[in-house]
Image (cartoon, rainbow, N blue to C red; front, side):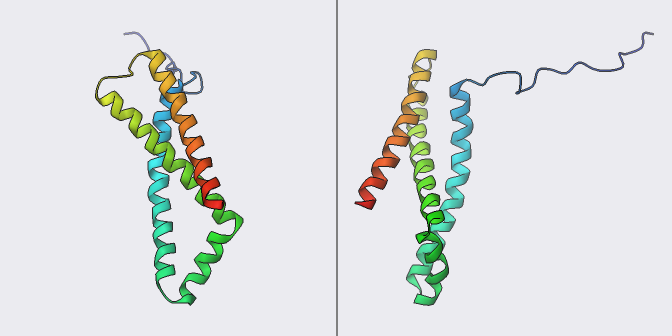
Length: 128
């Protein structure tokens, strides 16, 4: 009976391969879903504090009005629009459109552009 080798060769890992843009967007879609769920908890906390007495809004209001709070809200806006645009992209896929490689890459780039554009426009309108 032959002896097994002292080691087993490993399959190539993610560090060897470059993931395509569509795969990265799929991972991002799942991550933004989690981030949006956590952000909605913070927004609910803020609204609950605003609905209560003035003392209860002090702490969370100070955080949300700081540069860090505004950065968090901008990040939430980006993730929300990204998740929305990528969800629309998936709806087209559900109907059978956009599976070709060129169409999938084009829709991936359009998703990223639309999410960034909508986020910037939302904040420009909000700050005006």
